[in-house]
Image (cartoon, rainbow, N blue to C red):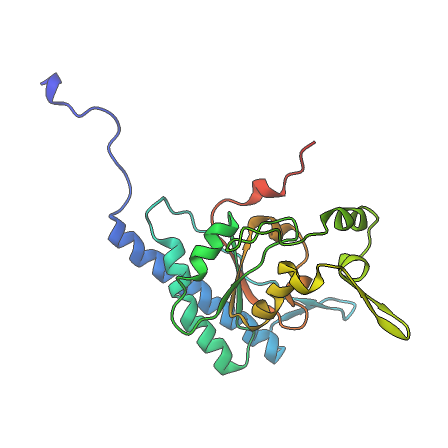
Length: 231
């Protein structure tokens, strides 16, 4: 009869336990691809395209997108499965550091405490941020920083610390207590670095990418909105 007909659309999808198994499989496949990519680069075999003029063009890494609804445990699985990747990469002498982009510093701080045992994690915060643990400014000289950036100058050598011939370097009065500069000692030793989405649109040079390249970057949650400029 009419009154016994179901109302609305029938739910679609798969059981969450089955979904988590599939997410774990896909994450492992992605991380396997990271190892393969850096292995090719290390061997310089099939890692470059050679153009007709003899120029070598670096073979691009894989880029994956995984769409998962809330409750699928994708963030947890990405963190847990990172440990075997890091161990394998270290054993093979390949880049092993991972960069996780997350919506907020607070989420990054929480996630960093949930990494598997033996994986060292750190958080990167910009100068304009507030330290997630102390609630203090990362930088106490933001006015000088803003002026330096507006002039297109390097903040680290114009505001933080500047070498002077035959003299001690000129330092910001807050240099010794600067949270922004202090964080790099921990970042340098970390296997996994968490950063806010905004960093995905800037240079990774500050995080030592040129000297110690990242194996891969993982962007958790939608991030493209953070790259929009608004008046």
